[in-house]
Length: 560
Image (tube, rainbow, N blue to C red):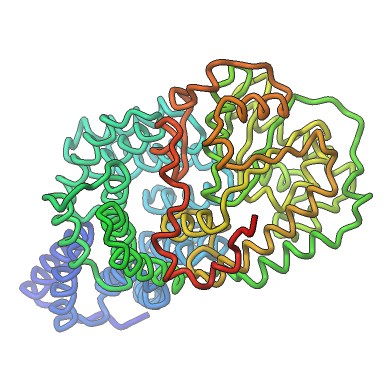
């Protein structure tokens, strides 16, 4: 522990004042003001735990995880009995992707102070990341009872209720925040997200504008705003977006998000060279902080194709609720197909969810097994996973005549699903490879499974691995359980392709499926805006505007 300095009363007051200035600047995203205050603090007390804490949080905010962890470790060493510092270190480990180290910090913090709100928030976030949503909600409700007016606790409850598809409860928590603070940027942004997922686009605009009025540096709000409209010319919004982008530190998370947003603007305006330059910057920032190993991921897909086909065809002779699994690459039209199916009166859409992963964890205990090992589990475990999956689905979504699951990571677990739920049907979406890959590259996709998408060469490599895996499943599964649909054919002949799709899914015809954009279920993907509009050919062939920049992808070009 660092030796404490003896401070005069004036110096103490000055330090407290500067800590307040730096903390407020950090919360408001004012990097330069925070740095300035920290510099003055360093001259007064270089080893002050709160200074080290602030510098660590600032580094994390700017995307420098290693520097952030170093500063936070030093802060904890300087004041080892402070639960809030341990909670922040836990948050740093969580941002670095080490959930176990994060959980250990949170446990130590709770041992020091069982009432610390920051620790409850951090541990709830880690539990959510592990799919333990109910446990996370219990922890946050405990914190809310202690501090019913705490906005951070309410935001945590919004996030967990949102993940649990408890949309009314999620909205209630945001409205409670705004009742106390009408200018709370995150609460307005959260209401904008809820409205976006429900297709209430005018309400989205209202809340996103409120969020940006409260915090002009809210990068996620700028991303949503850019996606909401088509830009015909430069205007006040594009200029404001550009100014915020220029103020964001190079390499920061905010800079990355603003670059994606501005790339959308430049694309709308037909300035494709400028758009691609921004996309390169945004993806380079994501790639620099990306722990995803594309070589290992492609090797894992290839390993699946070496499994004994007869073993993959084994399944128990059991009946179960009909299930549809939509497969494909991101940005291939999977959300559109889910929306079409969700409009059917017999179908409940599950979106992208963690129910299968949670079922595997409940039955097997070890979620870190390779996809090949999971596909080759003993039949008894596969059957138990199927039972547990349906229990979790029913618990979260209610009973249904048919469930539709579009968790895209399931492309690696088709064998397991077939053995767990033998009547399950698979719909494989295919779209032009270059349109698919370029759309991945130009959208800020969230999720650890999509780390191959930040470099064009890695995208091409992964796509080839995906094609080989889908060829394996196509050969392996009964033809009546594996249906393939081309996005371009669906757009060109909506009714004919919709009839064929419903027939392949064992569903009767429903006129509602022709009006999928009116379906009222929530859409939690990057396609949330697009699927609220009628079918259009506008997204077909978009890659051709960028052909000069897409050399690593051109080998994927269709020859038919």
